[in-house]
Length: 153
Ligand SMILES: [Zn+2]
Image (cartoon, rainbow, N blue to C red; front, top):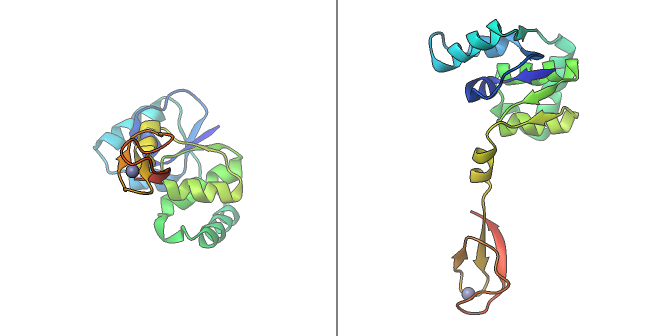
């Protein structure tokens, strides 16, 4: 079974059976918009709306406090995590805070926007001597011969 958060529904990349989402996600989606149309489509295709139990929600809140993600998580995000935890399902989300808490509590997750993640965490290479940036790794700086170090853009 797969649990969807709002980003997963919006991706438009989710199809098939064995899908569920908590009521918080449904409430978060504005009626009539693109996400709402995707949701209607998924519901027609068998998406189940399931409430996670309170004890599972409490567990997620504790974990989110521990990882420092609590302030970045909406009620819907907490429910998504709690439901995946409760059902031992795989979470489909592109939200980094949700993924972080999922890791903490041992919930499996998958992102949909692979290109998006690559874009965000694209590495650059920088010469330690002259400070020039390169798009790919080089054994040494072609300008000054300095050492090349990988840096986050
Ligand atoms: Zn250099």
